[in-house]
Amino acid sequence: MSGHSKWSTIKRKKGANDARRGKLFTKLIKEITVAAGEGGPDPDANPRLRSAIQNAKGMNMPKDTIQRAISRADRDSSSFQEITFEGMLPHGIGVVVDCLTDNKNRTVSNVRSIFNKGGGSLGTHGSLSFLFDRKGIISLSRGDLDPDEFQLEMIDAGVEEVDLEDDTFIITTSMEDFHQVQRKLQEMGLEPDSAELQRIPADTVELGLENAMKIMRVIEEFEDDDDVQAVSHNLEVSEELSEAMG
Image (cartoon, rainbow, N blue to C red; front, side):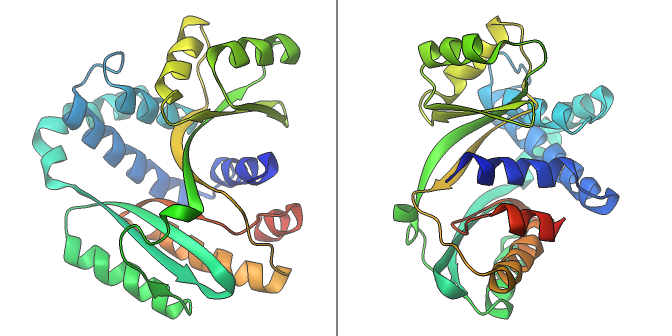
């Protein structure tokens, strides 16, 4: 997947309207609560929580909201279940939908319905594993950093790729090195705008604008579901498509 495609997804999140921003806040709060319940309330000792807090800060979530989400962990985290769905949409577009839900039957029904309405079908678990690689994707504002020096520093830390897009570094790591690179950035006194494990397609499918927009509308329907935390797909997000989607 090209650097631009990864960055276009981040830009869409940053440029979300108020309604979508509210949904993103809800999803981030849920992730913080579950992460704190799973690994404890100390982000220095809990990599998943550290990533969730970084993502929340990147969306300008207030500190007291983050703290309330952490404090709810003992009471609320056990009520959520993590479920992953895999399926196909038209034109060979594979989709993986990661969910956190307190009602599995509702989530299964909603996800299946979106696939069906979009002309696709829900597959079996693991059926699309060959299409995606798990990678750490970290975005970091350039600030006063020298791009050449920073890239060398990151290469020494074991990253796979560093792209500079619109004054933002997009850092790609292996899944195994993800938390190690986060610690390196912390040691350097740098706080990412976002840091998360993503499913990056080994190859992408490029479609004409009309068909691509139809697929993206289905992707957005998944993203708008309250139980859905992340949606991965192998559609090539061209600059034309990104601009057309706003």
